[in-house]
Image (tube, rainbow, N blue to C red; front, side, top):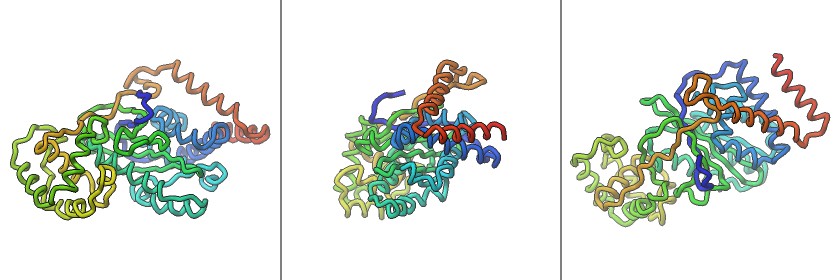
Length: 363
């Protein structure tokens, strides 16, 4: 795991279909609420953001709640249980959850604006962070995963984090992306914090530090070159015999369909890659087209380094991806136990919380 505070987290997980049974999800909601209350009471809501933004801790949290240790469903189910668990407690905790899976993810901006009015904070920076984190992981990093889940977490003080996931139907894997706002100095230059994945591949990675020249060139193409010239270059590129690499394919590249977007970028003149990426309509195909021109016409290649590493929190019972690391597992249990014992809740409140946890185990 990288300790560089400028990086985010990514997790690759087998794509499992279905959902958690109601009897399990109800318990996950209750336990997620209790653990969140403990962490926030003892360490504050910002610390809960940091932990959820750490892919190892997130994975361990899912294991504690009883979900599959390596299933893609742990992301959507855990985020759903957390959102439901702290419902009506958000103001007391100072922690808020917006977004979710599928159609719910697209309601994130409206949820953030609604919370902004209710708790009197400026929601605009949060909406921007939500939109840009999704743009980066769907367009600036292209590794074959289509985003379908986006959960945005934030505090009353404006701190934020993102947990979002994409799926790849061909490989039957899902990839989880973690963001922590306090470490993001630049949305388009190594914005991530830590990385967790089961598989690595080749990806168009325009947020890698070595892609800086490509970002500059791509922005220049979009703002300085007339749209008709860019379209002519794209049509010429389609006639070239290109290497058989999935990240440099032109199979789904249709120059004519990009004409309106290129005209819009040319007219708006975004000053840098971040603002170019943030423009409405600029998505994966537009960025891929511009990166192709950058590499093949101007000789400025972006990075194809997949920002993912192979590891899991505790290992697996069947030895996949490696045997259970008992020492690390025991340390995780000890940390959780200490968090409960050190909580700042009153003695009576602590007993009631422990009592609720005990009842969960006996139901």
